[in-house]
Length: 257
Image (cartoon, rainbow, N blue to C red):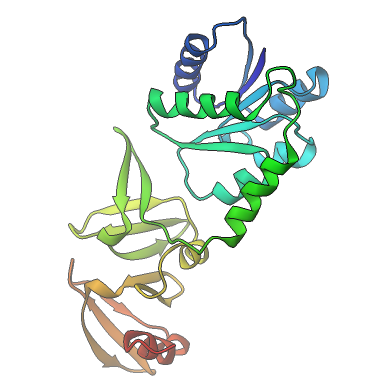
């Protein structure tokens, strides 16, 4: 059985290799690569493996660049620290999406699913009906907004509940989530992405660089230039609406559409 492992972090790859060898009883041939180009080279030379375990952020960019250049026939189990790529994952041949740090039990469940979905005699051909069902389920489901964000820290990855974010603030190339305790956390999103990901009944983008949570607005005051000053309850920050956003913000704050 051939497995392609796309993972840029050495320790994560070593852990996955150990788990894979422990799970499968028959002989395995596992190829580990760290970049899109290495993965493309392998696929062009060796063809499709029986299974792919794929991180999303590799050394030279997102793994979807690989899947755009090579038509994958193999099923893919995605293993990633980022939770914003679910739709893209299942628009490829994704059968599972494991969010780091995931447990051994979660990986085993995904591998069990792989064995259940694919016939032992023909594991290299993905049943198109399964893929169509995934896509239909995603397209027809009601939009769900992010409930939490994964935050990378020097000590590891932590989870930040969206309900605990008072506002988002962009500074240069970085975007921060400021929480109930005034702590700032770097989030791996652009402001335009965040507008789509968070619940618009709770969050509003008041200017180019700030999105506020209605539950943390303490008070509002008129400001020159048809703007408003918004005081946040968590850290007393005074945030200002932009002129073009003020009218829409007033409607939003009053629950109008």
